[in-house]
Amino acid sequence: MSEVVMPDAMVSPAVGVPYVENPGGPVGDFSYVGIDAILEQMRRKAMKQGFELNIMVVGQSGLGKSTLMNTLFKSKVSRKSVQATGQEKIPKTIEIKSISHDIEEKGVRMKLTVIDTPGFGDQINNENCWRPIMKFINDQYEAYLQEEININRKKRIPDSRVHCCIYFIPPTGHCLRPLDVEFMRRLSKVVNIVPVIAKADTLTLEERDFFKKKIREELRANGIDVYPQKEFDEDAEDRMINEKIREMIPFAVVGSDQEYQVNGRRLLGRKTKWGTIEVENIAHCEFAYLRDLLIRSHMQNIKDITSSIHYEMYRVRRLNENNTVVAHANGVPEHHLATHEM
Image 1 (cartoon, rainbow, N blue to C red):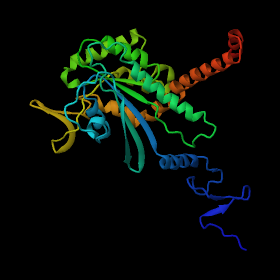
Image 2 (tube, one colour):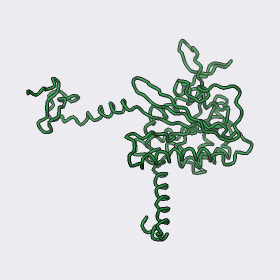
Image 3 (cartoon, helix red, strand yellow):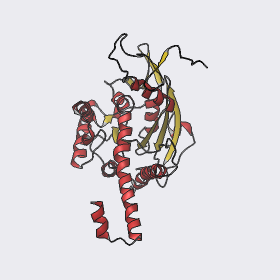
Image 4 (cartoon, rainbow, N blue to C red):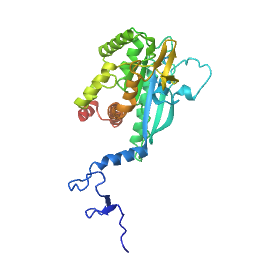
């Protein structure tokens, strides 16, 4: 029986498998091997699998969390947009509610999950209101860990871990509230926090600049490390890019899902009797910088830090706890366990 040879491929005598001759290299370049083709292979695989992004929004009611998420993805992705209800009562305790969407753009598919926290900061006594949120984030790490340590684990583990938490600061123009400081101080250790000044159009440019500077000073004074964290800069180029972002944090944002015609252009904005505030105009607000950080430039890095830093720290702690419990059950003395861990 004769062997069929593919018309555009040759059979490599070394390994006996088809390969495409010089797909991306210069024609007639004898030294070309084809290592750069790995990039196209990775792209095809990623396009088939699609991507996942889980964003949590935290802030008291009325700061425009749902509107901002709709503006970011130019879709009705927020919980309130999908589950329209009548007059909502303020929850007596913090509820964690998430909703997922499949978004596609230019052939790229992404499963976006938006996690809302209604009830946060809305009570007279907001002591420990960060705890349900911390528990939710750790619960997602635990669910991923349990899937990971299964003997017959799935080929692709569903990822419900919170990749980023957008924290909404009220536009008071003065300083952070104790609630803001306490929340970010505790949660910055377990999740990537990106602080934003909500409804920044209520501040003058001078008030906005003063407020941003004051917030940065308070973050440093309280040892709060928001995203992008200095310690995770990989090289000099990363450090230079991230330093510019750190100088802009917190982003002063305006959200709107209403379209207007301005000088013949369709744009998202907020119309006032003084004019239209253009959401994507960097002269009006810093929404465009936030969007670029979360989606266009740092999305993969945000996910990588979640996986390799925050989740890894949780995983190590949980496995150490399990080892300690097992050792105690087997009667191993505490000092023997400590010596072994060292």
